[in-house]
Image 1 (cartoon, rainbow, N blue to C red):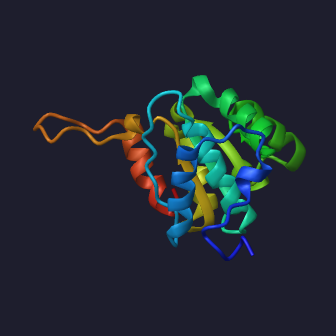
Image 2: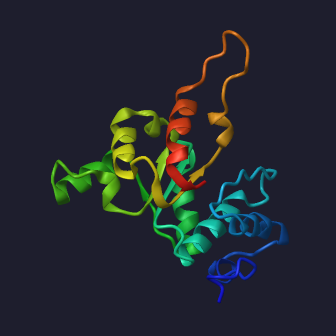
Length: 185
């Protein structure tokens, strides 16, 4: 029943969290849309990570998402992984050199590491590097069906000001290229 009714939620009851009313608003909005496309801009400490996790888990439970990518600052990659595992029971792999080396040892040098799992966390600096970005683009193609992109600290990808000398940052260019390829954001 909950898979068809956007007003009935599963994820809050399957998560190990203390839920507050305001954290259900983004989930409600995400389910009302044919494709989730939200910008969550709550104050510090109000649970943006929890809200993103609720949406990710609900979309997964409703079989609307298969591939998930969390792009975040390098300093919080482990925190994201631990929170998603602890609070929602979702296992994410951290995409880094060590992960790529392990996958190549297990499956051969020619393997695309992005094709070896369905949930990843990648840091903004690594996402800017062609060695990480290009295999991702190759894996997801022009439009990845049943995919979700969570961009933490989205302000780092904001376009440059309209002044004559302003130049977009590398992360802005990468997000501008990658984000439209994900069905849900």
